[in-house]
Image (tube, rainbow, N blue to C red; front, side, top):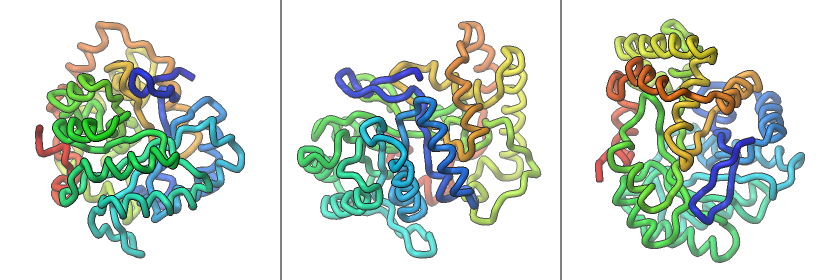
Length: 333
């Protein structure tokens, strides 16, 4: 397994990480047995980076990783955990709470569910607009010094927020959406991370399935699939975006790879400081995604990909208006 490093003195992790959200939440029903089999297969093949959050299934996802830890040595894995979003028993999102006391309380429950005494990286899933980022990061730093956290992360933070947080305590990575269809970070956020020596953990590299090559306009969706509310999956937006995927499919075919592999390989090729997550929920999709590790893109291919999927050609925002309003990264700066 190829490795990539978090910061100049930071640890190395697998060059592709596994995002575990879909095994518990938001994409419809998942098969618990297949989820565990996928986790085992991923770690067997050298995937060390596992991304989870206490919000995914209200703890279900962390309990799933606890099952994995019965079969894998804790020190061989890098478990990144998100916290902050509050949810009701029916799954309704109630807001964000990243106050220092709430941060420490959430970590205590996470450690209990995982059955371990530390997490490798802890990060707010969203920046709490009511709490200075210095206070949230300061609380995580206290937990780091106490040995319960190894590294500090951020998620969906604007460039100035990243700078403020990093001035408070060393930030190891910024987790943020980045793909051929979501390139807004290239103007300010990615340069800021590189200026500070912070790695970028890219999620949504397949744009929640749009770039998988398996999505169709008439695909049946479970009522609870949150993509039902995403603008890029609606009406004419979807037609436009699937046309982009078809153009990318032609490029993928020309070099003998799948659409998903080309999309993942493109993200990986944007820099050694970028570590993509794939959200494979079964072993078949995992095998396909890991095949991107063997894709070497010739220089001429980058221009062809840019022509097939121009930077601003996607139709629709990446979240619905309510969720967009929660993204510190979308406010600029």
